Image 1 (cartoon, rainbow, N blue to C red):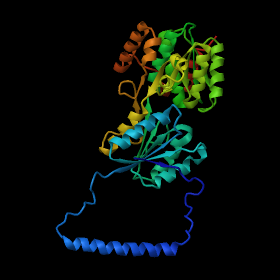
Image 2 (cartoon, helix red, strand yellow; image 1 turned 135 degrees about the vertical axis):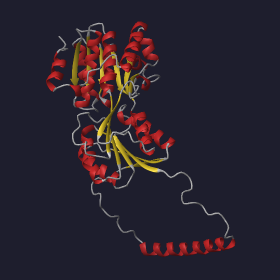
Image 3 (cartoon, one colour; image 1 turned 90 degrees about the vertical axis):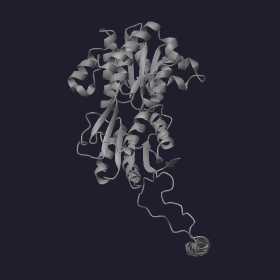
Image 4 (cartoon, rainbow, N blue to C red; image 1 turned 180 degrees about the vertical axis):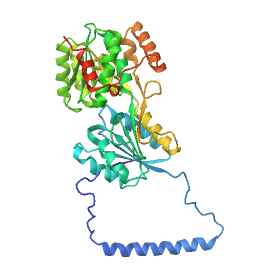
Length: 391
């Protein structure tokens, strides 16, 4: 069973108010306890050989807390929560889900509230500065193991933390695949990517997408835009429409909940869309089939499996966890993939699907290297973006 917890963020140390009738209640409790003791002694006296229940009867459960964004984001929160449900159902875990406040200034209080519950493990995602709060708190709670999803490879301040590990799905690899597919599906040679905001992890998405497009077509043109946040669908839609007016006929939506606006622009304009994090087309099948039919694939980051595997490894006492570092899960080890559903099969021509299969195999074997933002200088990254400017 998963416990839902809403943190009190205004005053974590506030004491409960005194209840009316407290003295009467104490007397009543004492009377009940005395009565129970009488019955208990009588039962024990009747049969001294009666087996007593063990204190450890049943499997002892380990307390694990997942601090996540609001469910329904069609992104990391939903994907990770699916894994959290599996953790609670399949592992000896007592799980609590805490929803992050919408105001990042409240993240610290939320995290400390979770820490004060004394769990064995806490995991969350890095967005909007949450990783910084975990890094600050971890030294003060050495008995808690912390894991932060989407931690950047360049993240500072973690090397000395023996109870912290960052996890990163190789978005550059899966975005390389989507960039290649987008350019193969494009009739104009112009494609776009709309992110919510740009920070290192999103820059890695962009790097992979551009590089994949260039792998398909050295003369690829790629529009790169940020809509402003990960919530505003109207802003994302307008951003995508601006790219479509430039001639982009495939748009990669990397904006969590705001991605729905990007994909709506694709539907209304008759161009292809590519989703991110979860299978976005599946959410529209039977509800808005026109919308589903334009989403040719999604870049799937398997946060659920990654989270499940981390908790299981900790429970099993694994010695290969990269504490004080970042672990990367890519195409080869199941961290990410492109969705190949019925719409992919219907909309993507057979020859392109066959080439995609070969490319996935080549990436898995290391025969094709997918460039990463984290291996570049800032000047190199800017040069990459400038090399594909839409004309």
